[in-house]
Length: 88
Image (cartoon, rainbow, N blue to C red):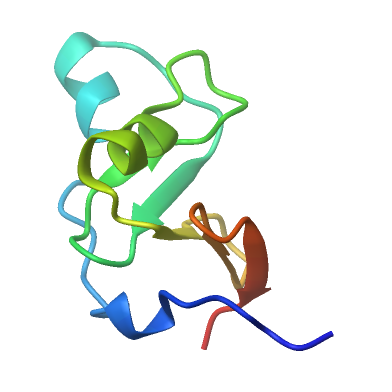
């Protein structure tokens, strides 16, 4: 299946701004898995976490691309196009 994501050019290859979910670190909450915004470097918690900060970040900023920060995972997700693809 061909990748149809229209947002891949927004990937700036940023470094993570924090070692964990930015909002959870501030509030003292925990998370399940971490996601990195490929546009600005925001680190947010996944949708399996109670706060879903990565998705909230997308809705607040329209930064469509995230990648997993979990070891051994090399995928990215485009919220706008609802598409997974391999992160290079």
